[in-house]
Length: 100
Image 1 (cartoon, rainbow, N blue to C red):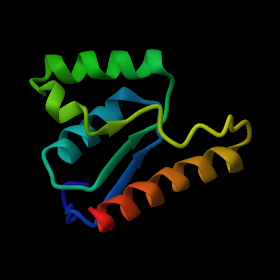
Image 2 (cartoon, rainbow, N blue to C red):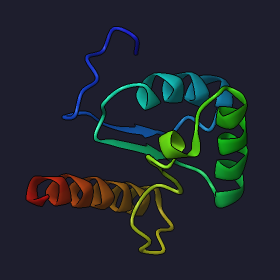
Image 3 (cartoon, rainbow, N blue to C red):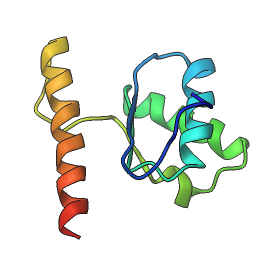
């Protein structure tokens, strides 16, 4: 990821469920100008994630950029439905930014 060009045209979703991977990616994403950062996981998982990020020196203003649990709440059950809910949220954010 450090070699990727992260800018306001970048929409990132973290799906690994492994803090060792996701946290490193979040450190890079939160310091960039990406338009969207989404993370898969429960509210409990996200609370733990926020605690780790706070301990790493990130402020709540920075971590408020993270959409978690990721996706529009359509009560998704299957992987396909979860993917649809995530993409719906990405499109929603993209289209709202174009208007604003």
